[in-house]
Amino acid sequence: MTTKPKREGAGKREILPPPQPPPVKKQKTEKENDKPEVDLKKIADALMASVLGIESKEEKGSDKPASAKRKRSGEKETTIVEVDSIIGMRARKNGVQYKIKWGDGTQTWEPYDNVMDDDLIDEFEEARQIEVYGDDTLAAGDEVEVKNMDDGFENSWSAAVVKKKEKGNKFTVEYSSFVDEDDEPMSESGLERKRLRLAPPAADKAWVPVVGEIVEVNEDDCWWEAFVEELMAKNKVSLKYRASDEIKTATLGKKVRPCSWLKMDK
Image 1 (cartoon, helix red, strand yellow):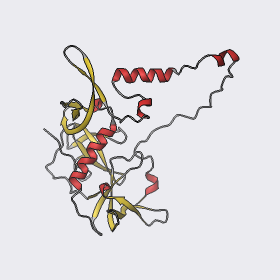
Image 2: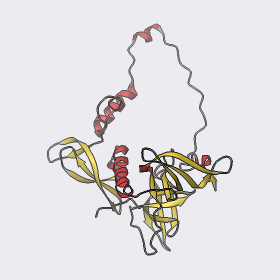
Image 3: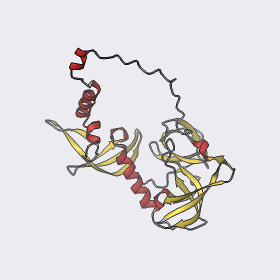
Image 4: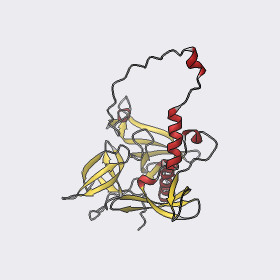
């Protein structure tokens, strides 16, 4: 059993630089005070946003709806087209591609790196998860997995047992692998239905993923989502974890399984 608070930061493993002393502010002279201040970083951000076709920080803070944009090359000129939504997903040898529905009604397949708004991917994947898991009826005693929301643990799932159903389609669960400071099984209440799924089955012995596919890997008592980078000898695969971008090697079997919500297009 693991104490859940010790999970903090385990997914990222970042090495932070030593703290730097605060800069000493130079006092302005009267002449300097008369000069208008020019925010070079703000100007650079605005220029970069214009070139790349994305919203600047000021636009994101305004009442305008947030959206990703992309420059599309035509025969004579280049225009900026707003994204409507992501409607599909497929795996290719060079990685995952998303099917984009553009504001002008056209649809194209774009590589993962071309999707500049992470919220679009989150919305698409959450909708897929609700579609796959939403019809399952949950009751006390059911073995489930809980979607983690902590920083560094995004897209990972932890085993638990449903203790009771609350009002408003929310649930109380008791974690299977985490304990509190008193070494008692850790419980959590008020969990939304969309954060719960019945525990998926183990992978079929004949299952082999494809390069670019998203799989789930068991580590630190969580199931983590990872991209398949390479298929290796002796049933080993090279994986890139989604939460941390770490690349690790794993062996197919009990510790690696298909991503159960994933519906890949051809």
